[in-house]
Length: 90
Image (tube, rainbow, N blue to C red; front, side):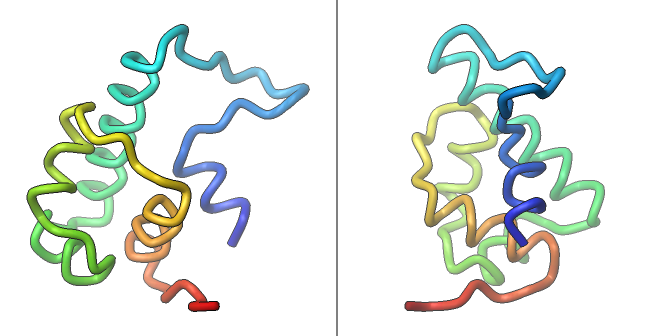
């Protein structure tokens, strides 16, 4: 599951060839684009993603627009919803 979250978030790990964005604004824009493309690749509407992730449709739209500063926990819920599994609740 961790690999899916890392892939989804586009994290640049040490030794990786990925280049991180240079600013927080660019990072959030890239994250939003990756969320949108992942959602569309899985043929999910925002409404369905919101239902599966228990995150409001409006907030998902903000994240996709690069405006929402999303927490790690919400990233886990989004990745789990897109990949069809349920995150474990502690």
